Length: 115
Length: 118
Image (cartoon, rainbow over all chains, first blue to last red; front, side):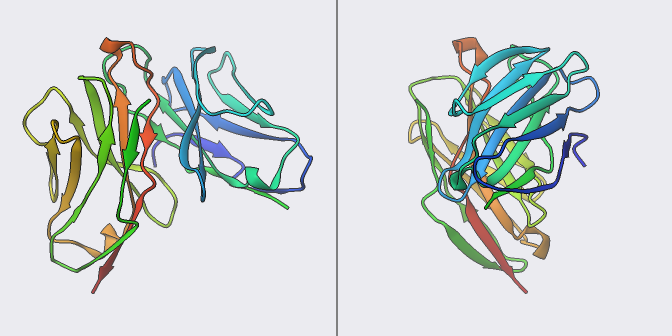
């Protein structure tokens, strides 16, 4: 158990819908990262938040957005869902940002299925 | 942009034997980190081993060791005395060093499925 929690574990929805994935980082960790794991694209970085501020953006679609709240939990919002959005979405957390090395601890992931 | 390539999609090994997983990467940076992650059927991403590019010594963690060839941009993982619990997807990953203004994101290879035969 990494100490990172993600809810829900599984999510099944229809095309065109909107969903919210939630992540609680390890106690004390200030950084949250979101990754998408799909069969065709592999594991891809989406976005990084540090202490409530966006730090870096990766291959995140405009239909997707994220935020980190004052209590440091993060939410990834996916809207106008398409079949191709079906994937495993991971959240990872690390203690800081900007230090030479921060290990990223991964949560168990949320499996999203778009029908 | 950095890329990570794992050219072997699948491998198998007999229990108690040794197997080597290969990974190559491309970068113009001189300082960075390389990782091997394990993803068992539970889907949890587990860090196996880490290598800092500035260190010439290869990293070792119990039965896991790496062969880091910086000039060749090669980073292989050797698993000794393979166990049934080693069966999983293995991902090679790259991360820039912040001393060069890089991002903290992990760049992953496509992964390789390791089967351990009893």
